[in-house]
Image (cartoon, rainbow, N blue to C red; front, side):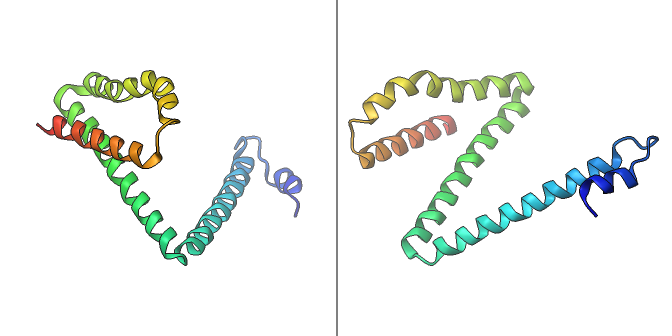
Amino acid sequence: MPVGNALMHSYNPQRGNYARVQLQRRAAHTQYRVLVRDVLSIVLIVSRNPRLARLLISYGLFITTEYAVWIAMLVFAYLRGGAAEAGLVALAQLLPAAVLAPFLSTVADRRPPVHLLVVGYVTQAAGMAATGA
């Protein structure tokens, strides 16, 4: 049965747009399943190459720890001073990057990527150590 006929036969004015909402949910679920299938197939292709697999694993670990630090700092600030303090901590984390990114990007274009990565990691480690102290 085509989608239009399904809407006409199952529409009940007392229930509102229930049938339409259900069809939209099914369509979204189908799109989600296709996306997950595509992502998994890409991960399988990448995992066959050992170098790319190591890169994928290291990036996954890096991003997990980065989010963990973010969440830990915001939860700590929230427990210490509520939503206002958590908001200030988030602002303190985001504002320097937003202000300095346009200027530092021009400098970064002139440097080797490995050097920038080392400087970035050392800066991040120093910031975390200072936060923990």
